[in-house]
Image (cartoon, rainbow, N blue to C red):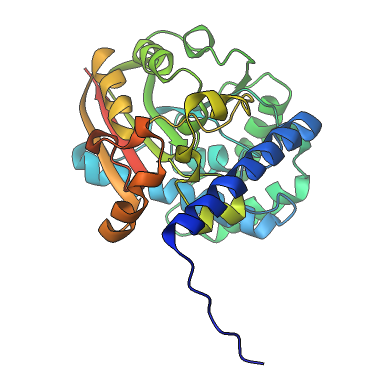
Length: 308
């Protein structure tokens, strides 16, 4: 049987996605209430091979953007690194140490690394040993991992705090680089985050972070990536839970960083709606988000900055 595509009007389509989005927001809140925060990656934690690939690709992605942003300071050798929102495992930490970082620090609200299977780390070390250009000792990295999971780490320092207090977790002016992958959009107080990062990063230190501005629920994300911007604050906040996308747009990140002692702030769009898509959808967004300053065509972007 041949299916005949049915053309729907934009108004009918908007009504459908508005209603569907509310359903997904309710489902996300219910899931959080029942299970907490357990799956930060877009792949199953049990697929160790894909998780290893994800961690390595993420670090390579950061380093590529660091090299573009500041070619003269693109090496991480001897650097003290902070990752905000490290997620489900310490694969990124171990890869950065294998690349020559002096110290890796992480701050998260949820301690997910306690659940990681040793098989994941076995596959990671196997992969790193096959990779060209790495000079590291497996025994030293395994020791760093063991100390981190027992809360006694120095080279690998994993911190969990429900209050996500950056300034209370690390020494003032002690860090060279801050990395983050799709975590900034979950921070409730972006201004406080920018202020506290300014306290712990040394002058000349840099921030490289990818920010995902889209709806996070899988199906509707593909169909209507800006779905969460359809709702006014009152309705959206009915579905609030800690970690819900904060709906902060790119320019506010810039303003906060500049306000708290950062300079050379770069907002580099990675994924965008086409002009026709953005134009067609603009009237479906809540009035709060319709101004050109919100850059609603931007779906994901790389945020780079230097501490003054």
